[in-house]
Amino acid sequence: MKRLVLKFGGSSVGTIEKSKKVANIVKEKFSAGNEIIVVVSAMEGVTNDLKEKSNSISKNFDNKELDVLLSSGEQISCSLLSGAIINLGLKARSWLSWQIPIVTNNNHTASQIINIKTEEIINFISKKGIAIIPGFQGIAADSRVTTLGRGGSDLSAVTIAKFFQTDSCEIYTDVEGVLTADPTINAKAKKIDKISYEEMLEMASLGAKVMQPISVQASMVNEIPIHVRSVFSGKEGTIITSQNEIDYKKVVTGISYSKNDAKVSLVGVVDKPGVAADIFEPLGNNNINIDMVIQNTSSDGKKTDVTFTLKREDLSKALSLIEKNKEKLNYNKIIHDDKVAKVSIIGAGMIANPGVTHKMFRSLANEKINILAISTSEIKISVLVQENFTQQSVKVLHKEFGLD
Ligand code: ASP
Ligand code: MG
Image (cartoon, rainbow, N blue to C red; front, side, top):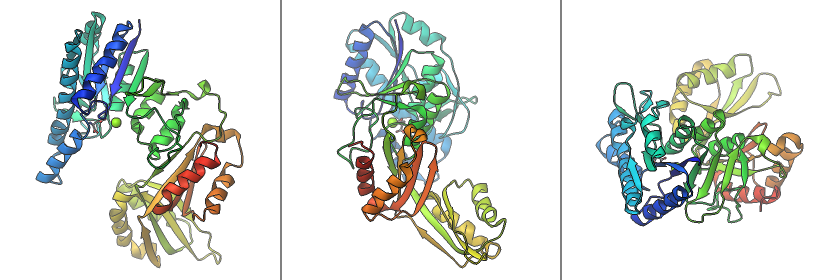
């Protein structure tokens, strides 16, 4: 007998028909002799609708009340699914996070799970019950409801797998698994059979939407393999696991892109020690994350240009912080651009294969796609391009690295 966590995303339980289908998947897994803990997110669109409602009251809607509001979506999907499973003649019960409890810190709208009490649910599933738990939420020490941040039900599933020491964690979604690229912009995208935690973390952080990045990090830290699979096809999906389980035949495993970035250039700053620190210190102190950085070498040793990228939502705050410091930084002008996209190739196979960088740059150059900034790590290379070249860049790189 195995103990399984099955997580169903909003698209899998988006309608009553779909919830009934999910109930049948759960029944099948249960009838195969497994203990089942189900984690669900809210029905598709529900959390967004609730968020909009709060926005129409105030853009600064109270965080604690926002958590109470947003967490209600999962209460609906949990009870509907539990009812559908009971309707199939099985024993099921939904729990709300505070009833378990799933204890988090009080960092409202972005809480971390600290502890999950397991006895009652273990007792229930050991007596042939199917437990249904809402993802995305918990309760803080002061008894107030919390949420884990958008997409947080993936993190709930991984954390529940950890606390209940389950044999596997399956994440059901509306695609075949993790794909080599976003299928909506490249029809040649294919399912990846196995991907390492590290690669998946890069893919998700760099734009792939299939898994929430923090949940991948949690699975990596706790060494909990994840099976991402389709709720529609029944076929094997993608296994996210440790690198030594994988035999790398390809240098690049997948391609991600994101359109959340903006680029800032300070033109004509003085080229002397401390200037870069002066530029970035106030940004860091204001929680603005910097991603790519380029500093040109000055030909005369006097003036240089510094370019960096950051999240689009932070752009105006960053510009005003820099302008406040204009006298100290002593630059000639600031240029900024938010019509940019970051396209990344990801693959642990890169570690052992030199020449990936020039291949990437050459294939973009052949398409006359200009590279605005570059950043690399051991297993990824990201380039910043004009936003209107996103699709073309993804397609050409997908082909170049043998993923078509
Ligand atoms: N319902 C939540 C959201 O939309 C959590 C999740 O779907 O994972 O962000
Ligand atoms: Mg999700």
